[in-house]
Image (cartoon, rainbow, N blue to C red; front, side, top):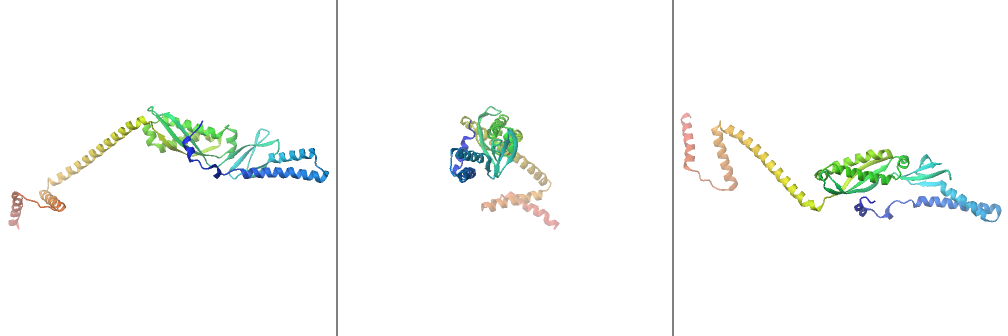
Length: 301
């Protein structure tokens, strides 16, 4: 079973990754040195080599090969003694008792990126989706990762895929598309709850891609357009409501003050002429109204 096949295109060159070649060479060199040392000691004592000497040197070399181990900085070795957990070893060089102790698992404690996905997962409104995601996790307890689960990497990938299908099945297609961050958080919590007992912690879950069937692209586009028109009309009606409320307040103010209303008319007329650079033809009745008002006020002065 393959998870997140699309992520394989982003994998780096294997030659640029960290390797264990140096650690293996140290063990092999020490075993070869022990083999040659036994042969040299036998020759120095007996004066000649025989099949017995070669056999003894071979046994010593194999013993060194099985008892001397090297762990890299990010590795921890789970040591079993006669089938029971004994200790954790590493990093660096460590030794084990041949035939009694053995290194059953080397655990990588770096951050691990596991791509996974869900093909044709049904949403709550029965829309099949193809979702691609990536899980970042690490092993904080090598003992539990070895003794509590058979294959922790495969188990984590299966758990993540199951949680993804469950989360998609409880949400509509619009919620899955628009609430990706919340889906990431929900997946992280669901996976974390299952893998904590295995000595594993989940750092983050990120949705990489959501593929909607092509048959629904047109329908969803029409639905989005209708939603945009609806929102635009609601915004326009709310603006008209606010403007009408303001106009009502202004009308109430001008209804009690004729002078302010006349000044407002003159101001609007001036602004219109200034913006357009045009002339205004005023009816004679309009100018007589101002003259009449000034005639009323002159006797009082």
